[in-house]
Amino acid sequence: MNSSISSIVNLRNWYWILTSLVVISMPLSMKLNNIIIVLWIAYCLFDFVKNKRWVNYNRQISIFLLPFIVLVIGLIYGIQVDSASVIEKKLSLFIFPFFLGVGPKFSLNSTRIILKLLVYAVSIACLICISVSIFRLYTNNDWAKAFSYYYTYKSFSEPLRFHPSYFSWYILSAIYILVIYNRDFKKLETLIFAVVFNYTIFILLSRVMIAFYLISVVVYFLFFLKRNLKLALPILIFLIVFIGISAKYSTHFKERFSIGIIKSFNGDGNNKGEDRFSRLDCVLSSFFAKPIFGHGTGSESTVLNSCYIKQELNIAYQNDYNSHNEFFSWGIRHGAFGLITFTGFILYFFLKFRQQNNLLGMLFLTSFVAFSLVENVLSLQKGVVFFSFMTSFIFFNPIKRSVN
Image (cartoon, rainbow, N blue to C red; front, side):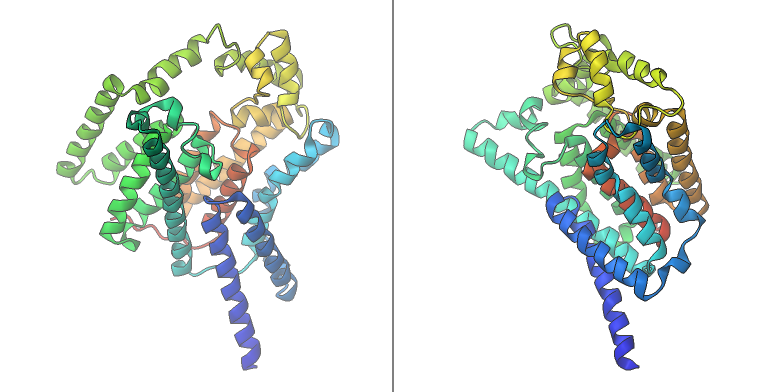
């Protein structure tokens, strides 16, 4: 009897350890993360059969699986559009909500430790990139490049093979955890993390993540510190002054936010198709070509390329650009049917998080929506794995807000 109880305890410990390793490896190495996910799935399958976890299946899990079901349905009429590789990446839309939904639940303390480990892992990823960046600058004897867009944006996150916008999303999520559960961190830890995260976000300068981050800061001070205006107002004034100085004097900031945005709206005659607005007509025409059920599961670049050729958007065609918008992507692939399903899925769980008073869940989904407006978030493994795991983990495990 005692041995059987001991074995169950040990198995649960393995479940916690493997889940923690999934979180830790996520921002550091996708290959290592894949290996750990396979081990995690093997444990979950063993636990599923041993403890008859299918009795825990419920309506919430079914709703979580809707995006994956739509992708599978799209295979019926979209096999010609690179479907296999896309489904392979999107398997996490099934794996995490299903096994986290039917599997054993973590205690409140265990849940918050796992979230804390994510903050540590993201900070390590930031420090790796900062260290490599400083080493390169030091060996080149040109420290001015530290704030030059072309020398940092594309190479800064290279050691982790991270797209800067995705890296910024991970950092932003870590900041949310740090703020909401600040009592779980020592004051010195919080200060170090704040400096590292803010410096890294500034170097990466993903426009949508910077904008959403600043909006989050303003909302936080207006709503959570509205009774402490003596603290909130000076910080808000500092942010406004800091942004103003950066906009006027920082070439790094100007390249991303003023010159870059102007090019996005007006286009660049020498690089047709580079800016996203020049590709919007192709995106919309591809959607309206099959508006009900779309072109099928796969990469929409195959559909868009024919339009790029007709409109002589050479840069877009050569780089095989997708729609750079997750909602447009669902519209092209699965038509109005898929777009409504995907949008309804997000809205449903946002309202559920609100019912749970789950501030982290609401912020994470909102940041995902903001990110989805400028990127095909679920097209890259680093995006779909992070989204599926975090949303499922936050929803199915106890999260208690602790804003100080």
